[in-house]
Length: 229
Image 1 (cartoon, rainbow, N blue to C red):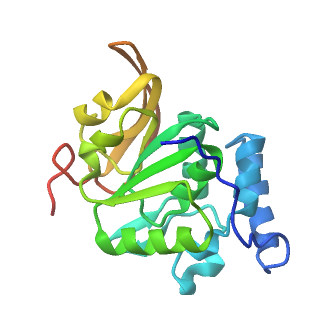
Image 2 (cartoon, rainbow, N blue to C red):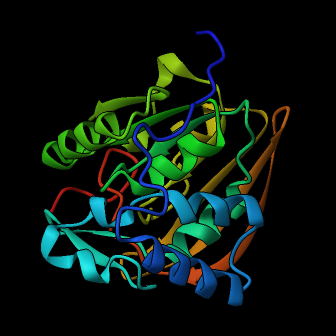
């Protein structure tokens, strides 16, 4: 697959869509919390976050809160997404696997910062909605799959970065095997109601692990995750 650099959001709203003030306010709060780098703040400043939530929740989209997106799932708070993205440290030429497309907002963040994003969502309705929205916004460097993200995307591996956006009971072996040499994986690991962000780095056949913040994500459903309720 050839290298591709996303050209940005087609028809990007800029400062004329009526929401820029709210975006700027969110960016100011993220900056005050020292939550992310300037390059990530710039992405937050232009992404139309309100498009990724139900219209009735648009006014709350730029607050630093998680919000429901249907099917028992949530869009994580902007601060959590910023933290996970910084821990992942995506680079412009990276191929990234995202496990848990959800609303597609984290997918868009990654697509702005990398070459390709391969994203998997187990809930078909969420996957379809995210695919339609990201297509409308002009992203051409995102590939979608509906199914068990806990087993990864074997035929597209290895990946420079892997981001898991749901809580796993343990690190999925299948994802570790799909991480490229020199790559990095970020995954919430722990109990169903409380996890810790674990960062894995691969060097040859060796994997180093570092535990970071406590967090709470919806369960990772799949063969190497939690059983379907």
